[in-house]
Length: 112
Length: 116
Image (tube, rainbow over all chains, first blue to last red):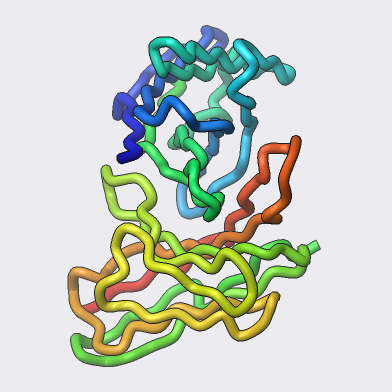
């Protein structure tokens, strides 16, 4: 079945780049997503990538997709303290439900 | 510009009590979802409704029921609450359209439920 895995924690210094990694199991996934959750809040869609793409850039965010290794990463350039949050990787189910399969989330801590 | 609205935001229940979480979306989306979020476990799908008039079980449906009242509203009911159902519940919706765009799923702000 589908499964998504992420490392639990990442700490970086303000101004550095952050790279959050994710692996997924279903090679037929068509869309992969990154969501951000700030404390006490819901999930906010950051970006997504279609499976026929290798890379997608959106301002400070860069998503890299390696389909062969089923590996997805999110790079945040010039990380700010406001980027401290939990980041969830998700793949879209390949059935007709369009539901998302989430990883357990990576907590990013940005140190001043 | 409400998006997905869910109520209540906070609720404390006693074991065995029942309650309903309400969810409404104003984006004319076809599909709606209920997830629960527990520490270190990400989000797990409880039930979903791919379109009005249909509902299906997700990963963790036991102890819950749902109703897709109309296209806008999708409620989640706990018939006899248990401490294991203490969690944060998220309602979500998406446009079940083909083609480009990623069929983005939009989330509500969450409902914090404690069962004592």
